[in-house]
Amino acid sequence: MVESAFQPFSGDADEWFEEPRPQAGFFPSADWHLLKRDETYAAYAKDLDFMWRWVIVREERIVQEGCSISLESSIRAVTHVLNYFGMTEQRAPAEDRTGGVQH
Image (cartoon, rainbow, N blue to C red; front, top):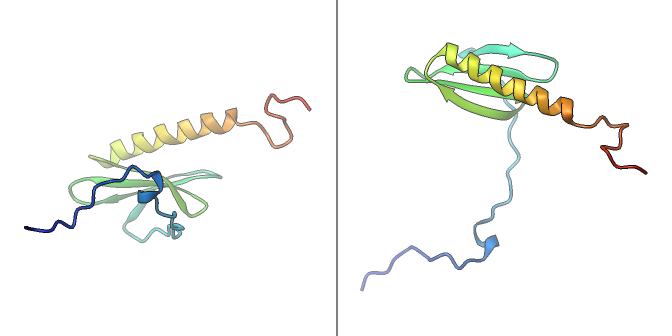
């Protein structure tokens, strides 16, 4: 009889849970191209020959990443995501507001 290294999943939700590892900061090297920057976010892209990898960074942490077929499509994708981030941040209540909750 051959023993298998495979162990069936018991159904316990914590069985596959891993503690999140802290992300190292993102510091672009010379082969990363700056696509966009504002007061909150910076977006970079890197040519991998078969695709462009792009990342959006906030406070030296990658908050979104993706890939595109060209530099132009990377710029469009990054612009789309940054516009979405801008919309959601505008909807977030300011610190001095109660967010609709009355005290």
